[in-house]
Length: 108
Image 1 (spheres, rainbow, N blue to C red):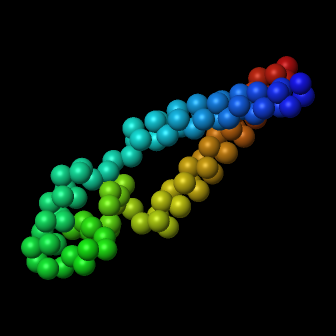
Image 2 (image 1 turned 180 degrees about the vertical axis):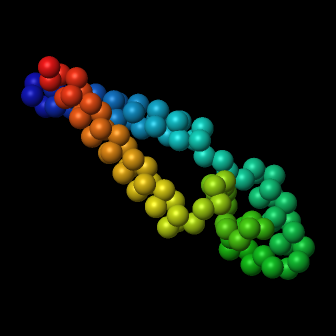
C-alpha cells in the first residue's frame, strides 16, 4: 500500500511540474521572435546553388544554423548587463525610499 501511494504521489508531482513547464514554455514562445521557416529554406537553396553547402548543416544567411532568436535591441551583452544592473539599483532605491516614507507616515 505504501508503494502505491508513493507512485501516485510521484505521478501527481510529475503532472504538476509538467503543467508548469508547459505554461512557462508557452509564455516564452510568445515573446521570442525566430526566423521564419521560409527564410531557412531560401538560405539553404542559395547555399546549395553557390556550392557552399557541405551537407552537414543547413546554415542561414546570417551565419547561424537553424532558427535563432532575433535580437531586436541592438545592444551588446555588456550593455544589456549594465542596463539590468542599473534597473536593479533603481528598484532597490525606490523600495528603500518607500520604506522610509512609510515609516515617516507611521511616526506621529
